[in-house]
Length: 248
Length: 288
Image (cartoon, rainbow over all chains, first blue to last red; front, side, top):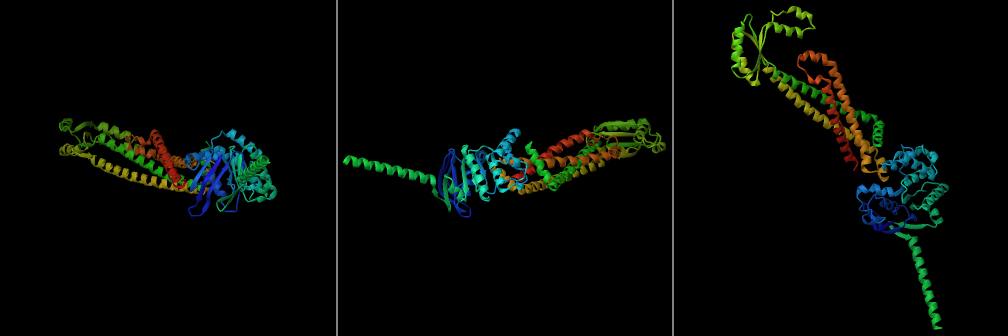
């Protein structure tokens, strides 16, 4: 589904944000993107929504090269990928309902249909009663839910969440994780950038670790490698046993 | 519909900027309206004078009809005259009475005997007026020659100057209003930079973001043009009786509601174009 091949991103200042990252994420996966600040997590997410282009390398989404995507097609790409931004990016002068309605309005959806969709999503994330409130009137956890609701409004195949538990207490963080897990169970691929190691270690999910722009650990690869090694060892053992039997 | 609502919200949330944009457009269209009316009216007055008798010769008291006829024939023989009309004392008094029907004091002072008979002569070309006037002045029966060439020439040069000044003013004001509006809309775009960025990240197309700003510029142009036109219309309505008595029998098209409506239509079209152009410049500059 998502393929990054030798992706490098160097900023105008010369700072390297990502360096030769090769990564493949399949449909329906839940991936934790971990690493210290400045390791390139947010850059990777921004590359996936074509908020910027890589200096080198290719990125494909469902076999479509998004690096060479013409600017006119970018809105279409962004409808396929829901994003929960680190700073949430809610419009403060609009109600939660209006914030979530906005992407549907931009897509030209029938107003009544769009309103129904927003009500459904609000119910799904559990903040239906806050629909008419402004972002400033909501708590951190409620705002995160609103941002998730907005990201889900197009029923995207992929949901990118950049530090969704960053400013939340432990209980609220787990509520958000639970919500993301529920969304993942419905088939949505989730890539979540986080610092929260408690959450990462408590769940048996794929972990992709970045450091100084380099991919230093991918549990899926490690598992595959381990599986491969175990299989090889078993085969070797079986061979040895067979040889022993033959000799005796 | 949604685009119009967004544009209206932009306008409502910064009323002083909206007022500045509308006022500059109003000023531009006030000047356009006033100069259009002056240029059209003066062109009409010139045409009227050019088509009406250009030289009037007043005869001395007691000039026999045979002398008048002889003079008339000699003028016709020049081949330069398009029409000659004899105005008798009675006809002159009739005209005087109709012009001054609302002023009985003036009517009491004058009767047909006081007014001289006259010949009203039109030429094919305005430059032939000189030679015709010379023939009339040489006649011993003619007491006075009223020669309209100078009036027309002065009027033409005035109209020409007005047209040039008007055009220059309209161009300068249009350019100023475009830049003022582009600056105002550009400022609003800058204020909404974060909102626009969020919209882009949420899959907004460029035109979804641009349209409300374009509509906003067109709205300022539209309202400015209507206000400018209304001011001109009000002044015209107020001055109509004075102007009518001043121009007398010249039928000025600029005083008719039909002309004013056509002027409004043209101005609205121009205003929408100016507004859209100003917004487009701002959008190009600030929404790359």
